[in-house]
Length: 123
Image (cartoon, rainbow, N blue to C red; front, side, top):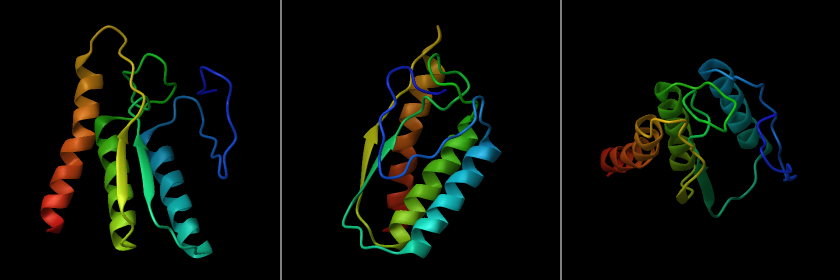
């Protein structure tokens, strides 16, 4: 139910419940990253669309992640790509304010700030 337009199909579609919490989201992500590793495959590049419409303060998203949950999601993705030495392209994704822009802008900026911190620590 987290689609406000017609849902498109891809190679891997993972359904998550409405009002999904940090625990559900992160355990699902961890499971699928592990499964992708187990199935193998050569990956030249990862495009990471780091949407923040998953936070509870989002107007259109129907999930309920906290800022800490989004931070953990980012770390999981950064670590996964880094451990496999796969280049990562980070792009902005959804994030739509209700009335107050601050939670959405903070969530977007934290995606890039955490990427910077990760890269600074890896160098």
